[in-house]
Length: 333
Length: 280
Image (tube, rainbow over all chains, first blue to last red; front, side, top):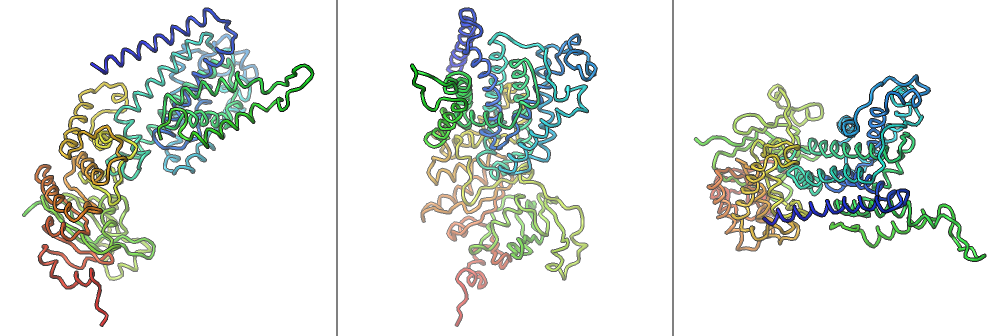
């Protein structure tokens, strides 16, 4: 009975959130920075939660998230560009070899599956490594993928190092919220299931987990594949948000941004990752932008404000969080 | 004659130049409580780790219910150690299952320095041990398609906590429990894997003089209730003498004595091992 009321309340909250978003879109200027933050924040929230599933819940320190996002973004782009637009997009590759377009929901799922498949292959050798080595190996993989997708020989599929564009995108903020929300809900269900408990057991004590009959490799592989699936979906959403995809954009710096969100939000906290993601995007794209512009009050130039100063302030905030607020916003560990 | 549960045949475990366990052969029969004792560093825990698959033995074989579970044969570097032996006696397919497979076969263990999942709740600790036997895949578990499986896991976990008197603490974080309760939780967690052989690694460590007495009664009680065989490593002689039906004594990795408690107590080799030799 108590559980049912709790479910009803959260259902009501979610409905309320979407209603607010809908109303905001009716009232406010669609070019407002608020919508940029909301859209990008939702996408980053999903990828941060997927990273948290690995780093926070399974104790696998992986830095391959940008690589899996790239795979998802490309899979989505490649599969959804309408055939009539392909000649223009694949202008150096005679229109490419794929001449069909899938519906958006199907393409989103395939984007996730493609990332998951790569994760499965990479996981076979890599997940036998311990902590730091795993981080290095996954980071290396992400870099390889980035180079691989720019390879000219794959041009008929990936368009080489050129942009993919003219695939279906979204304009309303409801869409990324819906998809990311659905995915995060699934991750929450997973984390609270028997398998989620097994992941947490591996994080807490591998030796004891194994002694309790938990097959370490199988469960690590599972967490890795599932996390990558959602990273792939968020990559596809990012492609839709940006309206274009280029492999060179998925740098390791992107993984670090996501890691930062996870750390600020609190390792092992899903709500923390979501909140931190919106805060991070808002600071990065909006609130701290003024730091990058020279400002004159009368004839007096405010010192320090110039291009790049935003990053300095950002670094200081992050150091402060790490030094004085180690558990993150919502962390309990 | 009772069914043989665990049989170690000349198990050797070598770390570099250190031979931690040297040609250990021992048996545990159905329904027995057997103790493995010896001074510090005698190789007791190493023997446990071989049985539970944490280490693959350098040599020897472990049988569970009469069928080989862990098996190895001397290669290369081990030849010297086994100079006198017939290598063909060890030949065959090497078997070294991982600890989770061994747990699945029905061996559960506790650890000398308690290893709970410290950040998780008491109930979750037991539920994790139930995970292995739960019949649902990750998809069904995530989308709650098998509520019956989940409910059964929860019921049997709660029953185990009840039995250990931990029910009122089931939502506490395991790491915050006092030492004695952590030990009990660890035993509950081991029982949750539905074992047929329970290995207890120094269950009385850190207990006051009176508690081992209760522990002995408790060990006998769970043996009856769960139809277990129990192998226990212990330093506490009171507990060993009270609870064990047979005792194996290790010293420097070698078996120096075996027999019932009374015989062990009077065995001069054992007394020497524990008290040291009088140089005069």
